[in-house]
Image (cartoon, rainbow, N blue to C red; front, side):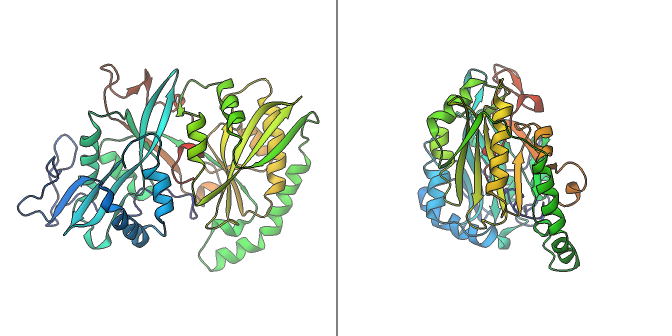
Length: 404
């Protein structure tokens, strides 16, 4: 959508051109790359190499110019203190010793059946405006693939925006699916930002949207024997227990203590947890995230446990949604990703899919792509025995997506 639902893999790419502006030749569908050790070639002003600790300030300065404001605290959380890797998984392009292009990855431990695998999610990809159309997007991408081919990660998976999807496909990534996002539109003006007639019309529609949402709520009755508690932060033990109750058997973030203690410590988001209980026993949980940079705009139902149905889960989610919509009436939008909350239940509260009209005209699709780094026992495009391009083999929420 034309708001904060875009993803951060490069707001604009630099194409696949060499330093002289000519198209760089490809071999087997891949772009030309710098030398393996990153040293400059005779006529090449760029060095393509893995990230070094001294690059942090350059990265943050480039981020300010290309994508927006970020600081040391955010960088330490996302990259330096990531518990799943012992280094910052990033390839940089330098010019005269300064970082002018980046290909970083957001690392997550993925659960695949009874095993875990390391997944890398390319994000925060940037090229300095003064150095675009010099092949840096292509060269850092190919260098990233080369660097990790014989290392621990099992696959890349990410959610490129419209500007970078074609670049991902050119470098071998394949589309898995379009992940649906469901929105409860409480302020229609949040869907447009042209500052003109459309925004004025959307503002006039706000009372209609408010009335619609409240009418939907009146049609819902939460189960009387389910109690919902709201927590400032995450009750980790209860959420881990719920996640273990019913594993979906698909590829998804491994929801253990490490995940909950680190993933929801993002300094640019605040998170509350809702826990539904029946007879004192937890039956469902939802983590709700609000972007602290713009707290009135979008509130995300970021994560859900258990990921699969249990006998009591639906009643728990019904009670939690009743509480969430009441607590967050001031948000312009409520949003949730994927199919972990049954769409039929979401519709009862006035949520609608971005894959259908009218939201499909006002939002950007969330396209998931993937690229396996190593063969899985000699089988290409599988991880843990599951075909990675089959959408039925994935369970995705906002928690699997780096920007939320």
